[in-house]
Image 1 (spheres, helix red, strand yellow):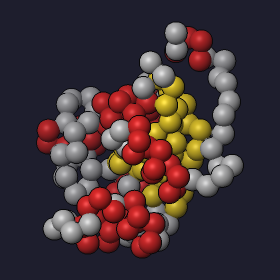
Image 2 (cartoon, rainbow, N blue to C red; image 1 turned 60 degrees about the horizontal axis):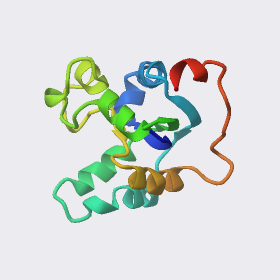
Image 3 (cartoon, one colour; image 1 turned 60 degrees about the vertical axis):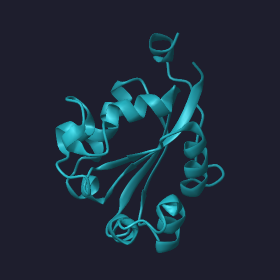
Image 4 (cartoon, rainbow, N blue to C red; image 1 turned 180 degrees about the vertical axis):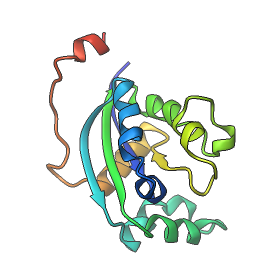
Length: 151
């Protein structure tokens, strides 16, 4: 499988509840490498561009209000099949349907406050990463442990 980069956003509820560390540590424990990280107050414009595919849906306005209501932590993680790895670690969008041991099953209770956003496909990850990170904000580096994580 190929190395990929994907976007992860610890949403306002995750930041407010002090779960940034536990959420990011779960991704690192899976072998994913953080190659970009920042705390962001999300502008209305950025929120609208990020959630553009939901424009016109009944929950769209609430989604924009929510993501702009408090800071978020935005990360780019890298690894083999990173998109799928992150999605399986995060769990189903509705925490009530999330598999035991996933981030949402362990920490979230409500679909509207599900702690984390994760890109759903490599193409989506590329588009989203370009929205949230500018030139020079993502780094490439080798970890000494990579040979023990990736074949």
